Length: 299
Image (cartoon, rainbow, N blue to C red):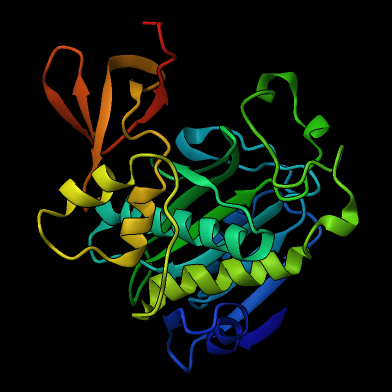
C-alpha cells in the first residue's frame, strides 16, 4: 500500500486545475489480479476504509458493469475503484457522481494520451464509436456517513484480440497492442495518477477558475445552452454535455433490455437526465435505462 497527499498528486499531474483539501490522503493498493476491484473495495469500506482508498488491479476475474452485466477485464486494462463521499441526494450517485467520473476519465485520457474521447449517456467513454471505458458506482451505508465506491474500467493497452466475438465492433482500446508499439504507450501509472487526481479533484475539491475544457461532436451549443436555463454551468457539467456523442442523434430507448421508445436526443439537463423527443411527438426525460443510436434509415 502506498500513501500520498492528493494536493501533491494534483499539483504534479494537473496543476492549477483543482483546489483540493491539503490534508486529503490517498491510499493506493495495487494488485496484479483480483476478482473485482469494486467488490474488494466494498468489503474494505464496510470494514472502515477511509475515503481516499483506491484499489488498482491489472486484471479482474469477475468484473461487473452496469445493470448486472459482466465486464471483460483482460491484461492491459486499468481497473480501479475509489472510495468517495456519498452525495447528499442518493439519486445523484447514478447521475451527477458518475457523470463527474466520466469527465475525470475523459480528462485523464486527454492529458496523458493526447486523445479526445466522447461520452455516451450516461457514462460510457467512447473513441471512434467504440467503448473504451465503463463506470459503476455503488453506495455503502455505514455509521458516520454513507460512502460510494466508484469503479472504472479502461481498455488502456488492451489487445483487441483479447475480446470475444460478441464484443467485436463494440469495444475498443486506447492502444490496441495487437498493432501498437509498447514504446508509444504512456506509462499506465501516469494515467492512474491523473485519473485519481481528476476524480478526487472533482468530487472532494473544486475546479479553479482557470480550468479550460474541450468540447467534441457537433452538438455542444445545444448541449450547453438550453440545459442551463440562463444559469451558470459548472465547467465539468459543460464539458460533460459538450462531449455527448448522442445529442442530435436518433436513438432507441432501452429499459430492462427491451426497446420501449424511439426518437431524437435533444438535451442533457443540469441533473444529467437525457431528454428525448419521441417519434410520437412527446418529450420524455430519462433518469434510468440506456439508449442506443438508431442507424439511419432503420426503424
